[in-house]
Length: 127
Image (cartoon, rainbow, N blue to C red; front, top):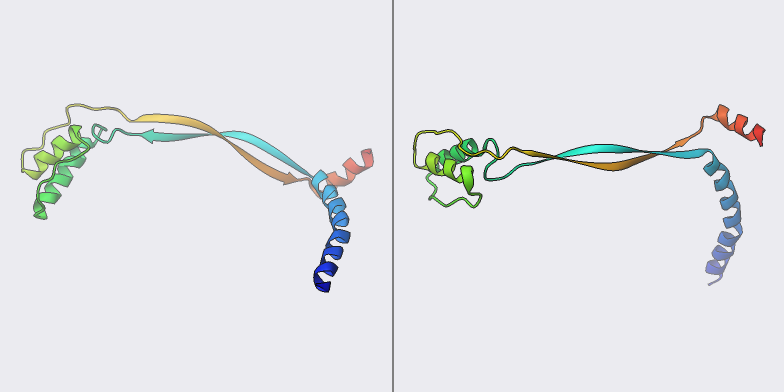
């Protein structure tokens, strides 16, 4: 119990000292924030530009591995390509294309900098 009381008293006595020393360091820091633009490509699973080709390749792979045919949930050109590839039909080109959409969004990036030593003395002399 005595140790807990001693530790508490020591912490309370040292707290004001640490608060005053931190404020001097905080004056030497500054934060700069700037926007950053990111992009996200959103593609339609069934009808993106390479959907038929991807489905055809997966269909031929499934057939050569001896897997049982199972219907594709993506549908669209992907499913048509899968079926053609699985049953060994001739490769026909994609008929319907939904172009990929590029969505842009902006976030903030902030960095905290510390003033160089030479600027600190100049700023203090002004006060």
